[in-house]
Length: 101
Image (cartoon, rainbow, N blue to C red; front, side, top):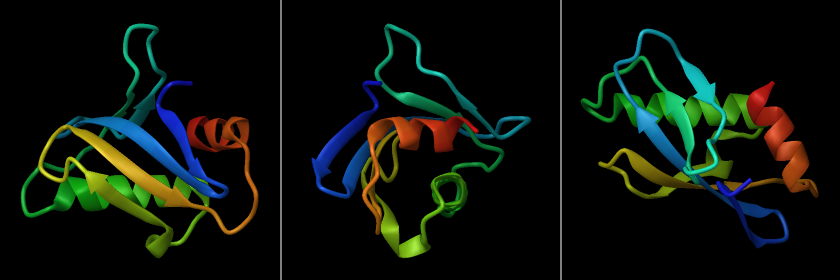
């Protein structure tokens, strides 16, 4: 999938498009034309609430701690880049399984 980039051994970058103020929280599969992972969030983009909800969702899905996930680009935009560091060796297919399960 195009939304995952390997930065180093256990360090990955995720390209995400966020849609806020949604009726339900959901992770949508990427289309062939879009290279971002689309995530629907319930929170409004006010006082960093949507960013916190996004980080908590990714943290829970990927089974990592809070200090292993951070937004490195797009803090105030809908397109964001998240940096995720894993303590164990993990491959891209395992990340995809964790995100969509």
